[in-house]
Length: 358
Ligand SMILES: *Cc1c(COP(=O)(O)O)cnc(C)c1O
Image 1: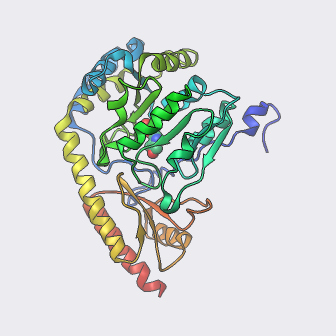
Image 2: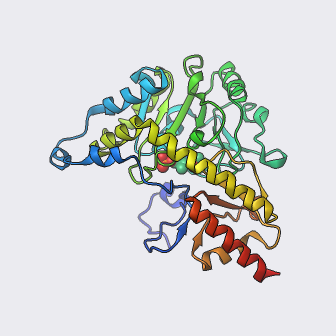
Image 3: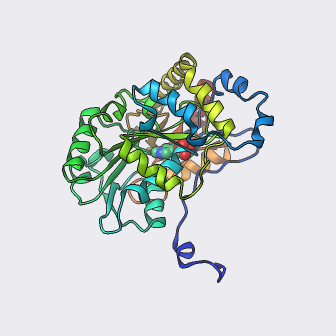
């Protein structure tokens, strides 16, 4: 029972539920799209000896980190916003860009945090039904009066829209004077170039990124947004009404080090992509329906038992994946890509389960 002391808002919200973070070892953990490899060794170097400086507040506006990001993207530091994980950046987008008179649109099958933010900030929303095969209905996404937000590649479907389609959406939104937010949490694993290349031409486009997935820094909590100055200023207004220093000095140093080690980044990304393609092929050979993946996970439906049963059978064998009891996707599992050895083991475990269920 809720405490009678809670506000109506606190009583009414339904928080996002992340995948579990078990503390025990011995699990193959494929439920939160973390990177199976450690971050760049430069991160450890960057953190060494920093404890004494923790007595000071961090650098205002994470300027050093924003400069590094800006240089990589061919933008100016004023076109970069940094936050405590991209979840925080995405949450700030709702009060910064969306109004209560106009529903914000997002795909019906997508990152479920958008719905939570909309409710928290009192923004109405419209979930745009998926087209066959879980395709995003691009026309419908921009047909409303208000803003639009979507991940590209989408989660949990792992499907990617071409850059030209993102540009069409940005243009359609700009024509009616509204914002398009593109959440690029998984862009490193896809084939399409980032929508960041459109930022100089679309003053209504905001692109968010995270260091949690491809840079293997989920525990650090650093994400960022790229957009023209007007949008970035909107985010800063919200941030400065909430917490002046959401990104701590250790996070700034570690994120800067990871972003600058491009060779390491590419090495690990390529490993994950190779294992993903190997694993997807293995699932197809075992009769799964698997969407083509542009992310570090696959979205797959077994043909030999219900999704719920397979989820439980994997769990009993210490393999943790993600599944939702939501209409249209209840038969699917979202399986993050681990190391090559882990994914070979998962395929062997699937063979065991399949043999025992027939
Ligand atoms: C993981 C994820 C995020 C959150 O990233 P953090 O930077 O760890 O907060 C945002 N959007 C999508 C679609 C994600 O899957």
